[in-house]
Image (cartoon, rainbow, N blue to C red):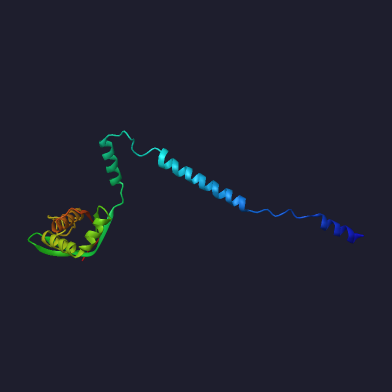
Length: 175
């Protein structure tokens, strides 16, 4: 009799019928598509823009300048340039080995300057050999700001362009 109760309890528990998950997946995908397209439509047509539609030309120009100022800078690396330290009387009292980064406006200028790197190095060598990179009154101290300006101006003059915005000396070792 104990066996009869066990058999009836196993047969009385019936599994529910299996349902397809396809309608649930279709509803989920449709909801995501509808929500995504609604958000995209809002940002394309209804969201406020950076500048109002009735803004003057000056305000638009100021907004464009702000965008240009916040733009990521582009650099061209120049490995190890040796420059003399020249004391009074045109005596060389030492040398400085420098690593230089040239700042340019955009990627096109970066490629343009990088393609002319031998001429850039030549312009730097001419400028630092003629003037030196040290303070005029002390031949042993390097004038980093003056040397950077000297190099940027020499490159732009030699290449007959204004593509190099600034030169930055990233590392300098006195030899």
